[in-house]
Image 1: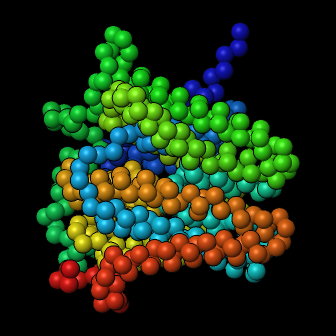
Image 2 (image 1 turned 135 degrees about the horizontal axis):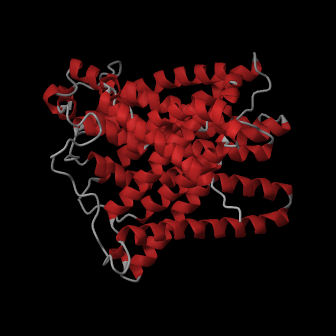
Image 3 (image 1 turned 90 degrees about the vertical axis):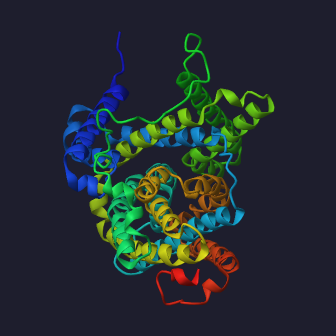
Length: 473
């Protein structure tokens, strides 16, 4: 009898990397100072192994990419199943947070596409026209989305886009860690936030990432079931996995229906498979509606779902970084570095300028969170926020929870149109490419128009000041 061990071998290697990274973070101040996530460090530890050593033993980084693909969708199901927080929140803050994120979608996509056009017209005529979209996919969306959408481009004749997307995501994580700490220190120096508020930086026992012995621990989850019947974690995880299974069945049926259209339908189906996390989230929302309608939503525990999401994201980030193909990255190193550098400058300045004007309270905290989620993932954004709000006592994290649902709705048209430049790559007709550029401009205009409404006079005064002066608030 032959037993397949590949998946568990990869999980064991990833776990080894996470354990080693946790030990390194706990021992070395450099990683503590810049709040390097253990999953990011583990990914870079495993990166050379999966590129040069493990393939000789029959282990492929492709398996890790597929693992990241599935873990992303699982995390979206878990997030969708969570009950919304019961705290009262101001709609202006929610919409302002959504606008800030959508603005980053637009500016990153615009920069990426325009620079891609420049490279195609000059030194890299064979570059695929959707290359620039990997900047917002990797930075603002995260490694899972960047890989799954990039991988789906194989149906259009593009190879290696998934790995390039993961590279952009890795650069975004690095920017989030180092750039975020720089912004915090710069903000303290400029008086954007009082130094005494940065409690986390002063609590040296927290920076290692592992609670010291004897410290009072926080509650991680609550029991909604009797363990002798079924463990709460088991039930919550079963619902998440069931939701993902339903998403698979839906996409399978959709693919069958689209197959009757012909090649165009097959390409559209491939696109939808690359966006499986969207369908997973929608199924999760429908399941939550069903549980509420049957008055059984109490069997779900938000904290347990947080643990499932955290588990999925940690494994996803590690596997995504380790899955990067250095050979493929070396082929596109110039546009990757150029787009990342210019994108980084634009993100840094635009986030601070935009957020300091559109928000009226906790402006620096909101700016920090927007920067974090615009360069990494929600987990890295919350890690930065925790530096200045260790216990999440402000409404910033709660507001983002509400805003993420609204952002998701507004982001669907954006994600569904990321394949437009590929039509130019296939047909040579630049009409599709410029339509994609205009879509990003539309997101910028949409964000800008409502920015003027929410910011009021703050949008016109002190226009040349990076940070809106506090005395003018």
